[in-house]
Amino acid sequence: QVQLVESGGGLVQPGGSLRLSCAASSSIFSFNTMGWYRQAPGKQRELVAVIASGTTNYADSVKGRFTISRDNAKNTMYLQMNSLKPEDTAVYYCHADLRIVATITRYWGQGTQVTVSS
Image (cartoon, rainbow, N blue to C red; front, side, top):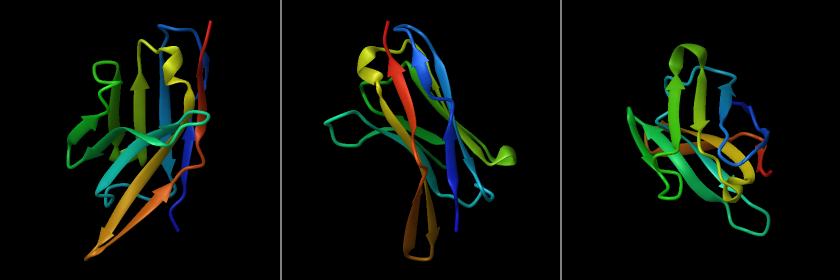
């Protein structure tokens, strides 16, 4: 069973930066896709960024401000968040997809709170 643990969340002022980490309990080399979602109070969970085979994609709302990356040697994925806005406030969840033949299993972390407020 793969476990993902997020860290790096917290309270930051508008315009500030945070770096979220998602540490896996096993090698992430075999994960096809990894990414970040977020869920604000009263809203549905939304995709923030994904990385797969070196390709990255971002939600329009975070393009140019957030950067997703992964370090296979450290079994860790990151989300660098710059120029944070109050509307970025949410619980951020990381996920990792493992594909074996035709079956894809998605693993989730427990989430980390990000609050952007003055």
